[in-house]
Length: 117
Length: 114
Image (cartoon, rainbow over all chains, first blue to last red):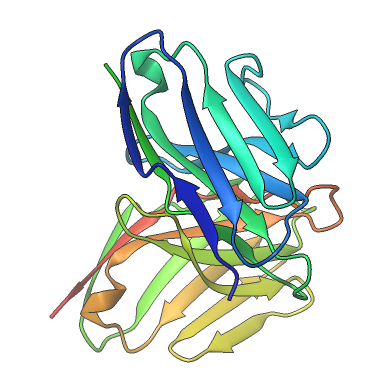
C-alpha cells in the first residue's frame, strides 16, 4: 500500500536556527502534499499545500517566510522552519494521496517532533 | 471557526462492547468524510471513509454512519478491543475543491478497558 515517509522523527534545535523536515512518498508520485501541525491535545491543523513545481499554498495565519516549503520532485516535499523559536515547538506531519488509486485516502507520515530550546 | 467538531474529548468502553464516536460539521460543502486513528508520536492511520452519497459504510468491526441533514457522522467499533485504544479523528473535505484538503476535528481519546 501507499507509504509516506518523514524524516527526522525527532529534532531538538536552538532558538534562531533553521530545521528542515523531509517528506517522501515511497511507492507513488504525489503532485500535492499537505503539511499539518499538531499542538498537544489539539487537532491537526493544515499549514500549507505543497505543489510540485510551483509555489506552496499557505493557510491563513501561517507565515510563508517562516515555514518554507519546497516540492522539487514528485516524491519529495520539504518543510524548513526558519529562525525557529520555542513557540514553533510542535508535532509536524506531512501527508499525500496516491493519485493512481481511486478514492485513495490521505496517507500520513509518522510526524516530526520539533523542540526548540 | 471549527468546521469539524468532536465534542467528546474522551470515551471509556469495556472490551467487547460497542464504541460510538461522534462528529459534527458545519460546512455544507463537505462531501467526503474519513476517520483516522492516531497513537502518540505517530502520524494518523486511515480507518474508514464515507461519501455523501451514502449513509453507511462498513469495514469489519468499523462502521461509519452519515446523517447529512443533521451534519453528523459517527464511527461504531464493535466489538471493542484494547488495541483500539487511541485518539480518533474525524476529517472532512469538499472533493470538488482544488486541493481536496482535509479539515480535522479535535479528536476523541478512546480507552478500551480489558
